[in-house]
Image 1 (tube, rainbow, N blue to C red):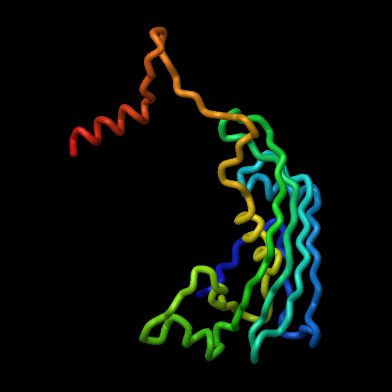
Image 2: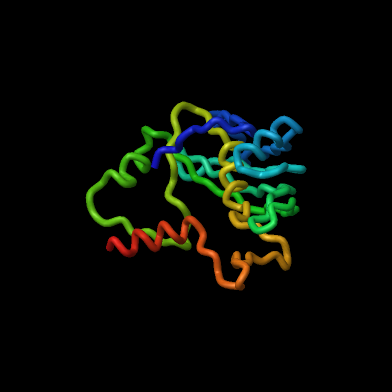
Length: 184
């Protein structure tokens, strides 16, 4: 699978051609402008703190392995009340990359035969061009995965709309669904 380079507000490019034997430690601490861009990109009210600690090291013959952790303090809108809701993101980061001309990378999904996938197993390696990888963008991907897609304040519940007689009021969405169901 080819790694698509996206523009990340916390981009940190690592030249993998000259990695130390024990690997290279990378710390990405977002400044105010980067935190604002992260909030906008991920639909958050704000990002108060963002920090990624990563180790970039050689993997097998010419691959690269990135491991570490991303932690952040964020503010989201409650899906019920729309009030601000504080949350934390704490995600382990792990990725394996192969140069696009690597024999392992070429054989991966392009060879005939079966491919066994384990949902709980590691992801397959991604390929990269040139001699650099954006490890900041990788950390941002895991940050995005750690965000609760449906944040709800404790005790907040959705209530059904009722008319003056106490009967349920059908929403526009429910009306459309009912009309579609009748046509089927």
